[in-house]
Image (cartoon, rainbow, N blue to C red; front, side):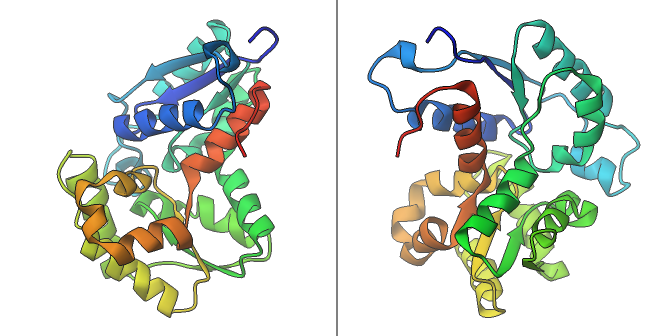
Length: 244
Protein backbone atom coordinates (compact mmCIF):
# COMPACT_ATOMS: atom_id res chain seq x y z
CA UNK A 1 0.00 0.00 0.00
CA UNK A 2 1.27 3.48 -0.87
CA UNK A 3 2.55 5.31 2.17
CA UNK A 4 3.50 2.24 4.19
CA UNK A 5 7.03 1.89 5.48
CA UNK A 6 9.29 -0.87 4.20
CA UNK A 7 10.32 -3.56 6.67
CA UNK A 8 13.94 -4.70 6.60
CA UNK A 9 14.72 -8.14 8.01
CA UNK A 10 18.13 -9.39 9.09
CA UNK A 11 17.19 -13.05 8.72
CA UNK A 12 18.67 -16.51 8.58
CA UNK A 13 19.34 -16.61 12.34
CA UNK A 14 18.09 -19.34 11.95
CA UNK A 15 16.50 -19.86 8.54
CA UNK A 16 13.29 -21.65 9.60
CA UNK A 17 12.61 -19.07 12.29
CA UNK A 18 12.81 -16.43 9.57
CA UNK A 19 10.34 -18.37 7.41
CA UNK A 20 7.91 -18.54 10.34
CA UNK A 21 8.37 -14.81 10.98
CA UNK A 22 7.55 -14.05 7.34
CA UNK A 23 4.40 -16.14 7.67
CA UNK A 24 3.36 -14.15 10.75
CA UNK A 25 4.05 -10.85 8.97
CA UNK A 26 1.61 -12.01 6.30
CA UNK A 27 -1.00 -13.80 8.41
CA UNK A 28 -1.29 -11.07 11.05
CA UNK A 29 -2.13 -8.28 8.57
CA UNK A 30 -5.85 -7.52 8.26
CA UNK A 31 -6.33 -7.20 4.51
CA UNK A 32 -8.15 -8.95 1.67
CA UNK A 33 -5.76 -7.79 -1.07
CA UNK A 34 -2.03 -8.14 -1.76
CA UNK A 35 -1.65 -4.37 -1.68
CA UNK A 36 -2.62 -4.26 1.99
CA UNK A 37 0.68 -5.88 2.98
CA UNK A 38 3.85 -3.87 3.62
CA UNK A 39 6.88 -4.23 1.40
CA UNK A 40 9.56 -6.46 2.92
CA UNK A 41 13.30 -6.44 2.26
CA UNK A 42 15.06 -9.57 3.52
CA UNK A 43 18.64 -10.71 3.71
CA UNK A 44 19.12 -14.24 5.03
CA UNK A 45 22.61 -14.47 6.50
CA UNK A 46 22.61 -18.09 7.60
CA UNK A 47 26.40 -18.09 7.06
CA UNK A 48 26.78 -15.78 10.06
CA UNK A 49 29.10 -17.01 12.83
CA UNK A 50 27.12 -18.64 15.63
CA UNK A 51 25.91 -16.08 18.14
CA UNK A 52 25.81 -18.37 21.16
CA UNK A 53 29.28 -19.80 20.50
CA UNK A 54 30.73 -16.28 20.42
CA UNK A 55 28.87 -15.00 23.49
CA UNK A 56 29.83 -18.04 25.58
CA UNK A 57 33.49 -17.81 24.54
CA UNK A 58 33.53 -21.04 22.54
CA UNK A 59 34.39 -19.12 19.36
CA UNK A 60 36.37 -15.98 18.58
CA UNK A 61 34.39 -15.32 15.39
CA UNK A 62 32.10 -12.38 16.04
CA UNK A 63 28.82 -12.15 14.10
CA UNK A 64 28.85 -8.36 14.50
CA UNK A 65 30.70 -7.37 11.28
CA UNK A 66 28.25 -9.32 9.11
CA UNK A 67 25.27 -8.02 11.10
CA UNK A 68 26.46 -4.44 10.57
CA UNK A 69 27.11 -5.04 6.87
CA UNK A 70 23.62 -6.50 6.44
CA UNK A 71 21.93 -3.71 8.37
CA UNK A 72 23.63 -1.09 6.22
CA UNK A 73 22.80 -2.99 3.04
CA UNK A 74 19.10 -3.10 3.95
CA UNK A 75 19.16 0.59 4.81
CA UNK A 76 20.76 1.40 1.46
CA UNK A 77 18.15 -0.76 -0.29
CA UNK A 78 15.38 1.43 1.12
CA UNK A 79 14.25 -0.20 4.36
CA UNK A 80 12.60 2.31 6.71
CA UNK A 81 13.29 0.24 9.81
CA UNK A 82 14.85 -3.10 10.67
CA UNK A 83 13.79 -6.23 12.53
CA UNK A 84 15.92 -9.15 13.68
CA UNK A 85 14.00 -12.40 14.29
CA UNK A 86 16.66 -13.73 16.67
CA UNK A 87 16.79 -13.02 20.40
CA UNK A 88 20.46 -13.94 20.81
CA UNK A 89 21.48 -11.43 18.13
CA UNK A 90 20.07 -8.63 20.29
CA UNK A 91 23.24 -8.97 22.37
CA UNK A 92 24.67 -6.72 19.61
CA UNK A 93 21.69 -4.35 19.50
CA UNK A 94 23.47 -1.19 20.68
CA UNK A 95 26.33 -1.58 18.18
CA UNK A 96 23.85 -2.15 15.37
CA UNK A 97 21.78 0.92 16.19
CA UNK A 98 24.97 2.99 16.05
CA UNK A 99 25.85 1.57 12.63
CA UNK A 100 22.67 2.68 10.80
CA UNK A 101 20.45 5.75 10.61
CA UNK A 102 17.12 3.91 10.68
CA UNK A 103 15.33 2.44 13.72
CA UNK A 104 15.69 -1.19 14.74
CA UNK A 105 12.78 -2.71 16.63
CA UNK A 106 14.13 -4.08 19.90
CA UNK A 107 12.60 -7.53 20.20
CA UNK A 108 13.90 -7.94 23.74
CA UNK A 109 12.38 -4.70 25.04
CA UNK A 110 9.07 -5.26 23.25
CA UNK A 111 8.84 -8.76 24.71
CA UNK A 112 9.48 -7.46 28.22
CA UNK A 113 6.87 -4.74 27.71
CA UNK A 114 4.32 -7.30 26.51
CA UNK A 115 4.90 -9.34 29.67
CA UNK A 116 4.30 -6.23 31.78
CA UNK A 117 1.06 -5.49 29.92
CA UNK A 118 -0.08 -9.07 30.56
CA UNK A 119 0.52 -8.57 34.26
CA UNK A 120 3.17 -11.27 34.56
CA UNK A 121 4.81 -11.47 37.98
CA UNK A 122 7.31 -14.31 37.55
CA UNK A 123 8.52 -15.31 34.09
CA UNK A 124 10.42 -18.41 33.03
CA UNK A 125 12.82 -17.94 30.12
CA UNK A 126 13.30 -20.80 27.67
CA UNK A 127 16.23 -19.87 25.44
CA UNK A 128 19.75 -20.58 24.23
CA UNK A 129 22.76 -20.55 26.51
CA UNK A 130 23.79 -17.32 24.78
CA UNK A 131 20.59 -15.56 25.86
CA UNK A 132 20.92 -16.86 29.41
CA UNK A 133 24.62 -16.04 29.76
CA UNK A 134 24.31 -12.57 28.24
CA UNK A 135 21.31 -11.72 30.42
CA UNK A 136 19.95 -9.55 27.60
CA UNK A 137 16.35 -10.76 27.94
CA UNK A 138 16.35 -11.35 31.69
CA UNK A 139 17.51 -7.80 32.44
CA UNK A 140 14.84 -6.21 30.24
CA UNK A 141 12.20 -8.22 32.10
CA UNK A 142 13.62 -7.38 35.54
CA UNK A 143 13.70 -3.70 34.61
CA UNK A 144 9.90 -3.85 34.56
CA UNK A 145 9.70 -5.23 38.08
CA UNK A 146 9.05 -8.80 36.97
CA UNK A 147 10.83 -11.70 38.66
CA UNK A 148 12.81 -13.96 36.31
CA UNK A 149 13.13 -17.73 36.58
CA UNK A 150 15.93 -19.42 34.62
CA UNK A 151 16.21 -23.14 33.84
CA UNK A 152 18.68 -25.18 35.87
CA UNK A 153 21.94 -26.13 34.08
CA UNK A 154 20.64 -29.56 33.07
CA UNK A 155 17.46 -28.09 31.57
CA UNK A 156 19.53 -25.51 29.68
CA UNK A 157 21.55 -28.27 28.07
CA UNK A 158 18.39 -30.16 27.17
CA UNK A 159 16.91 -27.00 25.64
CA UNK A 160 20.08 -26.43 23.62
CA UNK A 161 19.82 -29.98 22.30
CA UNK A 162 16.21 -29.42 21.23
CA UNK A 163 17.12 -26.10 19.57
CA UNK A 164 20.38 -27.04 17.86
CA UNK A 165 20.30 -30.80 17.33
CA UNK A 166 16.60 -31.13 16.53
CA UNK A 167 14.84 -27.94 15.35
CA UNK A 168 17.79 -26.29 13.58
CA UNK A 169 18.85 -29.68 12.19
CA UNK A 170 15.41 -30.30 10.70
CA UNK A 171 14.81 -33.34 12.89
CA UNK A 172 11.67 -34.13 14.93
CA UNK A 173 11.75 -32.28 18.24
CA UNK A 174 11.32 -34.15 21.52
CA UNK A 175 8.02 -32.63 22.61
CA UNK A 176 7.89 -34.68 25.81
CA UNK A 177 11.29 -33.31 26.81
CA UNK A 178 10.15 -29.74 26.18
CA UNK A 179 6.95 -30.38 28.11
CA UNK A 180 8.88 -31.63 31.13
CA UNK A 181 11.16 -28.57 31.16
CA UNK A 182 8.19 -26.21 30.83
CA UNK A 183 6.17 -28.00 33.51
CA UNK A 184 9.11 -27.84 35.94
CA UNK A 185 9.36 -24.07 35.49
CA UNK A 186 5.64 -23.61 36.05
CA UNK A 187 5.85 -25.81 39.14
CA UNK A 188 8.65 -23.54 40.38
CA UNK A 189 6.28 -20.58 40.33
CA UNK A 190 6.44 -19.12 36.82
CA UNK A 191 3.09 -17.68 35.72
CA UNK A 192 4.28 -17.26 32.13
CA UNK A 193 7.00 -18.77 29.95
CA UNK A 194 8.85 -16.92 27.20
CA UNK A 195 9.89 -18.79 24.08
CA UNK A 196 13.12 -16.79 24.20
CA UNK A 197 14.72 -18.47 21.22
CA UNK A 198 13.04 -17.89 17.86
CA UNK A 199 13.40 -21.59 16.99
CA UNK A 200 11.17 -22.66 19.88
CA UNK A 201 7.89 -21.33 18.37
CA UNK A 202 8.49 -23.85 15.57
CA UNK A 203 7.45 -26.53 18.07
CA UNK A 204 3.90 -25.44 17.26
CA UNK A 205 4.44 -26.88 13.77
CA UNK A 206 5.68 -30.29 14.86
CA UNK A 207 3.68 -33.03 13.06
CA UNK A 208 3.30 -35.01 16.29
CA UNK A 209 1.97 -32.08 18.34
CA UNK A 210 -1.64 -33.26 18.06
CA UNK A 211 -0.68 -36.38 20.02
CA UNK A 212 0.90 -34.25 22.77
CA UNK A 213 -2.17 -32.53 24.19
CA UNK A 214 -0.46 -31.04 27.24
CA UNK A 215 2.48 -29.71 25.20
CA UNK A 216 0.02 -28.06 22.83
CA UNK A 217 -1.79 -26.46 25.78
CA UNK A 218 1.49 -25.15 27.19
CA UNK A 219 2.54 -23.61 23.88
CA UNK A 220 -0.86 -22.00 23.31
CA UNK A 221 -1.72 -20.85 26.84
CA UNK A 222 1.42 -20.51 28.94
CA UNK A 223 4.10 -19.45 26.45
CA UNK A 224 4.71 -16.02 24.91
CA UNK A 225 5.86 -16.30 21.28
CA UNK A 226 8.51 -13.62 20.76
CA UNK A 227 8.10 -13.77 16.98
CA UNK A 228 4.42 -12.88 17.32
CA UNK A 229 5.50 -9.89 19.40
CA UNK A 230 8.02 -8.83 16.75
CA UNK A 231 5.58 -9.30 13.87
CA UNK A 232 2.92 -7.24 15.67
CA UNK A 233 5.24 -4.27 16.14
CA UNK A 234 6.66 -4.53 12.62
CA UNK A 235 3.17 -4.45 11.11
CA UNK A 236 2.14 -1.47 13.23
CA UNK A 237 5.38 0.39 12.48
CA UNK A 238 4.93 -0.22 8.78
CA UNK A 239 1.48 1.34 8.87
CA UNK A 240 -0.43 -1.80 7.91
CA UNK A 241 -3.62 -2.89 9.67
CA UNK A 242 -3.04 -5.44 12.41
CA UNK A 243 -5.52 -8.30 12.56
CA UNK A 244 -7.37 -8.45 15.88
